[in-house]
Image (cartoon, rainbow, N blue to C red):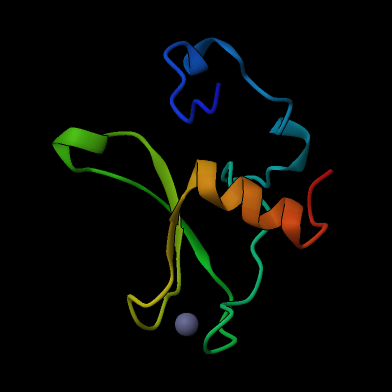
Length: 80
Ligand SMILES: [Zn+2]
């Protein structure tokens, strides 16, 4: 089965808290396109309210929801 959708993902909280800073952001790496340090924000849009995301502070050319960002950090060995 090659399933990419999980229906009960919300119940599993990975232990990322130890890696968050004072504002609950995960480690902020540099934008892969311009080198500026990414910023962490929380969505205020209805459909995604409360979801944390990470973006380049300069231009909207780098933008990831936290789920994606976690995998990105793992790929960069910033998270185990
Ligand atoms: Zn950038």
